[in-house]
Amino acid sequence: MDLRQFVRRLTVPDGATVPTELARGGVLARALTRADLADDVAGINASLELILQTRGGAWPTGPVTEEHNYVDLVWHECEFRDGGSYTYVLRDAAGGYLGCCYLYPMGGRTKLTEELLDHDVDVSWWVTPNAYELGFYPRVHAALKHWLATDLPFRTPFFSNRKMP
View 1: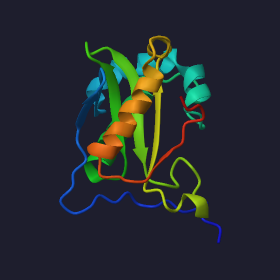
View 2 (view 1 turned 90 degrees about the vertical axis):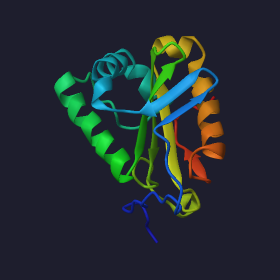
View 3 (view 1 turned 135 degrees about the vertical axis):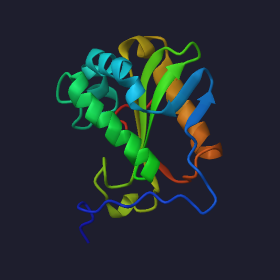
C-alpha cells in the first residue's frame, strides 16, 4: 500500500499535555509565537545554507520577509493551540536566539512509509551558524531526546534531520 499521500494525526493521550516551555542543559524551548518575529526572520536569513545542510527538506527556499514569516508564525501558533503540530523557538540560558525545533505528524515533513508507521512524531530542528559553532546543534538533539523521554507525550519519535549529531 502506498502511504506517501497520508499524514497521521498527532495523538496526545487523555490527560497528557504538550508543554509550552521546556529547559535542559542550557537550551530553552518555548512555543513559537509572533512575538519571536524579528529574531526568527534574522535567524532564518542568517542560516539558509545551514538549515538545508543539517535539517534538510524543501524549506527555506530563500530569504524570508517579516510579512511572510508573520503568517508562518501565526500558523505555528494555531497549530500548537489546536494540536496539529508543535513548534518551539530555541534560546540559550541568556535568552539568545538559537533556532527552532518542530514536532510534526508523521507524513507531513517526511513521506509516510510502512517502516515509519510505528513512529508517532516527526522531530526536526535547526540552529543558527553562531549557535552551531558554539556546539548547540548536538545539545539541542540531546535536549529533544530528554524531553521526548520525560516531558512530551510522544514515545516513538522519528528524527528526520539530514545531519544527525
